Image 1: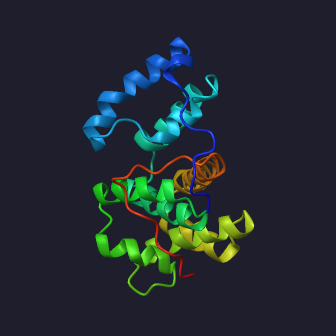
Image 2: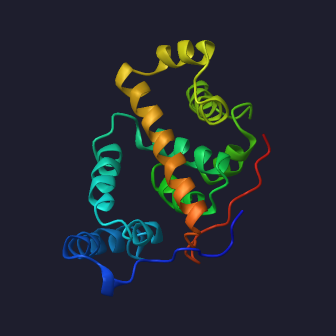
Image 3: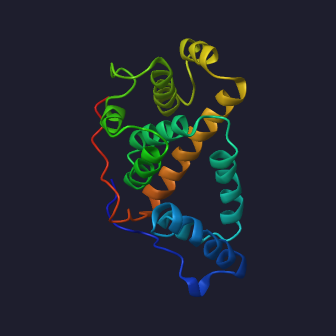
Length: 192
């Protein structure tokens, strides 16, 4: 796991006017949510000015207009970040997950995977989907059939987008060395 920043934040001196407007516009909402401003990864993505607004539109659709329960999305984000060994994504999604209703004791259970006995059927299926997509880029017939009994078609489509999004963000954070803000928790070891 990379421990040092490779790329760093794009310097405000080099931001285009659209990037400046986006990042400055995010400041009040980020301050209200975390008291810390936008996450460091956005300043890394700002190195690619054309990508930043498109990515934020996609991410906002998942976060604000998604059909999955917020808790479900955060459970998917946490397991995906753990599977990808992204300390940055894990740290942020602990904060978001707790706000969405994930219990503190469930955070350690996420490291134990879908076979942890304390999970509900639905949670177990969501975690299994994370693990299968991570390992095989596919969901097995058995898991898909079980998910189909629990989730709508739109939720299944969104589930794959959420897992894919946090896989991508984990790769960006890991490859470029996005630093984890000091206030955020460290990632646990993955049990399974």
